[in-house]
Length: 395
Image (cartoon, rainbow, N blue to C red; front, side, top):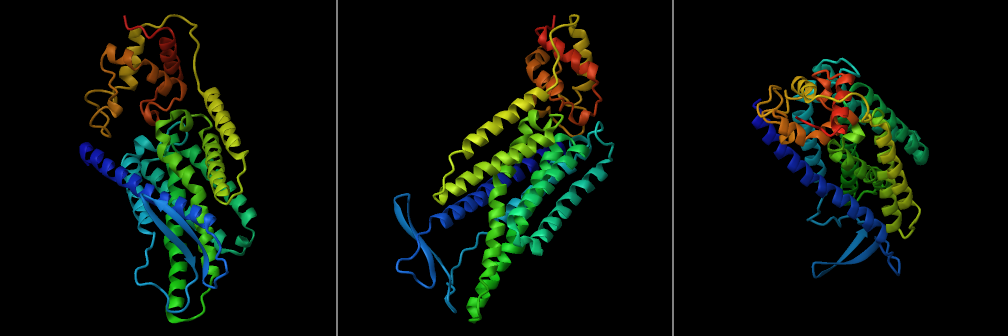
């Protein structure tokens, strides 16, 4: 496919994905907050679980949570489902356009595993399918009666997935497939577990048969799962901008830590909405984030300013051999029709202007070249690092 077409398809899918994701996450946050703030009916009412008054944009609203009696289903019932559907569809298409269409560039890392592109794609797809089946099977089993223990076990399984993907994929692809797995779980939760439960309760109400209210409780559990996964998934959506995370030698451990930080923050919001504020959670999240940032910095590979002076001719040779296939006014890498992020390294002035990014991407995090397709050596990375530390001279 023409690279310009791919770029605009990427743009359209990413834009739509972000918009629908915002709508979906917003509704998840709103309903969790709403449930926690409902005021119980006084005197008690058999069909009203609670209500709340709201003010927004100059208007007043009253919202009630009810258990409907037979025949009471209103004609205009609004379902919150299409946000999840379109977020899932655009996300999967985006995964295909960005990663699967150029799997040899964005997924395969020969320093970890020498997979062919189709093999990497197969592993990615299998992760999404098997991951959902295992998660759903566990929560449909009798083990679901022990929610705390099963939640802890699922967190351990997720950590195992993060570690495993980090052993076979490039850092970016490992992160993105972990986020994609969680996104698939969230969206399929909506369409296969939450919506059918709601539909069954509505059908019972319409026909006047007894309503199985346990269906609503099970659906609520899946909604809570989705709610706690939102912040970790949002981080994965942003992670490609931060090579110190996915490019770290133990990037999988950093991702697990950031997932924990996101879940702690989400838990603080949920507790606070119920009037059970825990003031220690936010400081704990900040402290955890600071530790992760420190660990990411310590894990970065760098060189000192010692050693013999580096001639720019040596640097230019490395850049021409390892970098300009992508970062050029006319890239020769078929995956790009223009230099990624408009970073060009054709002239001494352009190379000098990008000295610090070169150090960050090729020396410290070592995420460039992508998948190390051009096989930059450790000695070449050290040479680039020394050149930058010595002032990045081009004379």
